[in-house]
Length: 518
Ligand code: ADP
Image (cartoon, rainbow, N blue to C red; front, side):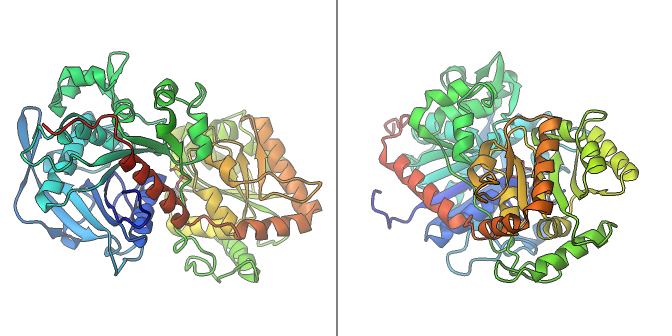
């Protein structure tokens, strides 16, 4: 497996993938990585649940039902399939070496609205069972299609049982007649350590694994069951989505109580920066913009700014800097420090500075309410509460600055989109933001954005103030920084090569959990 031109069989096990199901960056990352790996010649397949919202009419049903042994019995499901890119709105299909997606269909577990929950039940009570079933079904799927991967690549806590099932069962050949997973290795990618899948340990019996495994694999978390923790302990290699976040998560501040578990894995844990989908996020070809533009001709960016100001009902003034922001309204994104009623800095930023502020996003109810209130009180603050791909492209293209005051950020996509759209990021020096943005040096003119270390309303205020000062007083630095950002290469190709190396190093190393086939 050591040679660089060995083509691997890779199964991505995921709860989200664009264009089928998305709540955040995970969905973008999985599909883009799968396509980039296929572009390198690997055989890549994706397994994911067939949620109620995924229309079966666009998919092909595999013949026969699929039984999945769970909780001492068997759960029956169906499998649907399509090639990634065949559904409208998704990434372009690869005609050569396409990525095949398999949807596990189970009425009881996935025949309802919502991925992890809905407005009535934010976290479905049966999530541990739903995703335990899905993880087990990934192996049954391989048997059904008679295709045994070299690598099972699990993403986040919903797929974290995949490495566990591999180590304590599938690889040992005790649960099946074949033992064909004997040489398969597992990779677990953590897209956000803040979500671990912690549930009552009574759910563990549903996995059909013994209580010895519960303790050996380290699921125990203060008498609860922590799915991600079990996955971290069992996967052959673990990674997260930026090198800096990998380092940060080894500390108690960012480790979400799993820093010790991660430290224990030593060199098996690393960081690989996510790429961006350069076909979708490219100012030269973006159909959501009024005109294309590039580093050589920025007139299209001025048109995008004009359109953005018009759509948000702001004066169409090229001289005033526009600050854009797109995010899920959760504590992770620094929304308390920015929008907290009576203490958040957004109010004073818009009151004191000659700028315009546009916001797109949704999430916590208090924040949505505060943002609506700010829009009604401030003439230069406008918001769209909701989700819109089109508006998000227009903000990236039309804004002059992009604000991301994140408490923590495993990788972050918007700062990379901003850089390639010539929109200067204003970011906290954390996680993937620190790996992708270089702070402005007003003496040398170097840098690609504006950064601050400590998250507080005053540091956000000061750093936005610094960016606005540069806008009015260091125009040529702003222009050179823009061009510098636009020339950055954040393509998935680069990241896919690193994942390929990670797979190969896992395959080369005798996996710690590789028991002899019984
Ligand atoms: P996270 O995964 O933590 O939400 P990322 O920056 O990694 O943050 O990825 C978020 C993705 O979702 C980006 O592509 C971002 O543009 C998109 N996004 C978030 N909220 C919205 C929204 N309201 N409308 C359109 N796109 C959004």
